[in-house]
Length: 240
Length: 316
Image 1 (cartoon, rainbow over the protein chains, first blue to last red):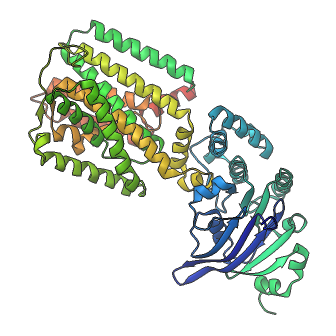
Image 2: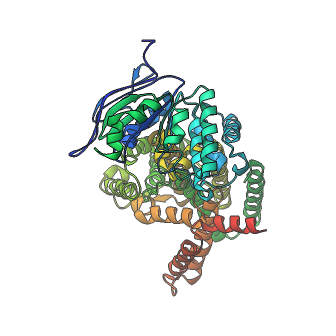
Image 3: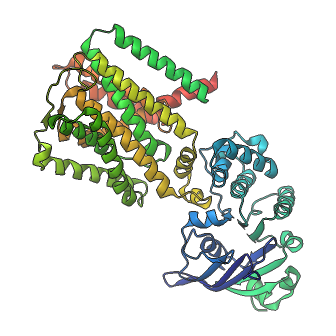
């Protein structure tokens, strides 16, 4: 099983009544790499994230993480196995301070509060949020809320992190900072699977791109090949 | 507040109450102090689950009544009151686990409604059970005073015993705030889904806090029964008791260490003292006053009296 990728998704389905949000979704994520999941609006990217992380229960299919079947496990159990995520619409702990919110994540691997807080401080330094550690979650800007979510996810020391549109709504400067941050997350040995719309961000960063359209993968390969693939162009722009 | 601050405030409160108990000879004031401390413990234990974790319970009297009935049963059957305290707390923990697992599948208002229903069922069961005195309740037999019987000649020793329980509840709350469970409870209140995404098993954490809260509420119920020497369903399990507990928590300030004691102080001294003053001719005046206070607090400062204190400190 040593050749199995860190995350292997096969035939994943998610139905909401008659709607098939995911309809036979396959995905391989190699350890230590950045894999990008792209696709037009409504293609099922966020649903795919939710089903992999366990926030939603897939209707059918297999999700193997570290060689172990995790499809249908409770959300918190999958998190404990080493999958962390951020949300497309930020989900911060508004009434908690920045350092407290990250401590909640840090407590997963460090049950002692003093150690968890020290680790939270270290992660806040890593994402560049240390100066705002005592601010309440609700009083942060959108860019900082996204950083906070990233810090909270990283504080659980995940093997795999799922990033849902971390760049959306950021200014170009903030985007450049975020790219630097992604590179240093990879350097820590954390595998990244990310949904992103900003293609010029992905091009230099992603090792592999998977394109999703109407709940099915239509392409998997290098970012350059994705940009040239007629099926991908058609999915985004329509048939010429 | 830091732990040192909590310890300092705690020491002042304990010293003040002990001094008051030593020098006050007014039995009515002493019984008010006792009631205040009991409600502080009840409000505090309610605060664990409804304040920190944000799962508002209107059935907390279930655990208070469990403790009260444990004392009544042990006293009538010549059991030790100390054993009654332990058994009442143990039964309350088991009840909390049994009630908690299904109820915590619900969230928000649905959870609140479920807690009302569970406490109402308990009240109906008691009112229809011969061994529990039906609707008439229990008179506890009067025993020779002393620690062995946990019955005393005056009110002052009761206040001191309640003070010990109160101190234990406060220490437990400070410890909770500085524990993994405490952080998890607050995270669940803030955003349960996001908490799960970092590995928090929300239901297990809530049930744990619920069980601890139930134990404290049962201990308060046992002491209450030892002092009043009378227990019936309405005064220990009734919805009005559950609501009083919740109001103590809300008025004082949810999710804080000192909110519930402040709320209990206001509830007993303001509401009950005024009620006693106007007793016969001013019926309902206390409720009017208390209602007005609740309206004022909820509209001006939803974080309760403790929130006002915090805001004041932040300004200075």
